[in-house]
Length: 305
Image 1 (cartoon, one colour):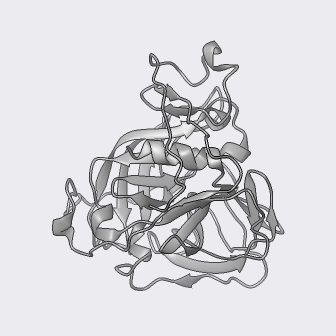
Image 2 (cartoon, one colour; image 1 turned 90 degrees about the vertical axis):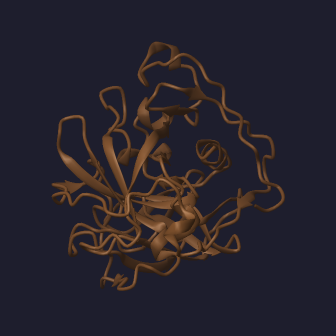
C-alpha cells in the first residue's frame, strides 16, 4: 500500500433500515451495510489523491482460506443484475473473449450470482480489491431507494469461465453500499462492496485502487466483465480512453451490456492495475462508471477490514 493512503474510520450505530427517517440528514457517501451498520468515513487528506497497491496473487488455492473448491452447480441466473441500463455497444463491438481466465487480472475479476428480494436470480461482475473483498455496483447489492432492499444468497466465482470455476466459489459475509444509493437511488453514488467469507484474493490477486481530484481525460483505460449477450459466464475484455471526467462519474466508450455492471474500469499503476471507477450505466453515445472519489476510496478501505 503506497504512502498517503487514507485510513477510514467507521462509526457504528444500532441497526436501522436504509430509508429510516434518522438517516435523512446524513451525507450520501455515508456507508451502510445489510446488517444496518451506518458509518462515516474520515476524509482527511483532501485534494491530492491516494492509492492502494494491487497484488497478482500466487495462483495456488492452498494459500487461500474458506474457499469452496467444488461449488454446487447452480442453474444459470435468469437475468443480469439490477434494472439499470448497464451499457451499450458504441460503433463496432470492441470486446474480445478472455479464453484463459487463470491469468491476472482475469482471475481477480469475479462473476457473482445472487437472488433478489422477489426471488429472481441475477448476476453481476465484480473485482477483488483485497484478499477478502469485492468492489461492484451498488445496484448489484441493493435495489436502490426507499422501496429497494438488499439482495441475498451471493456466490462469488473468481475467474469464472463458462461452466468452469477454476478458483471455486465464496459466500458473502456482509454487503455494503452508501446512502446515496440505498436511500436516494442517485446513480452518482451507485457503488457497493462485498466482504467475503474467504481469502481467495491471496490466490487470485486483487486490483489496486486509486482516487485523484484531477481529470482523467485521455487516460487509457480497460474493463472486463460477464455480459448477457455472450455465452453464459464468459469473460470479455475491452479498452478505450476516458472521454469526460465528472466529479462522481467517468464517461467512456467501453463497449458494455447488462451483466457487466460492477466491472472494473482500470488503468496501469498501483504496482499493476488501478481500479478508478466501477462500471454502472450505459447510454447511446457513451457509458459511465461511478468514479472512485476520496470518499468512495475511504469506504472501500473500511469495508475490507
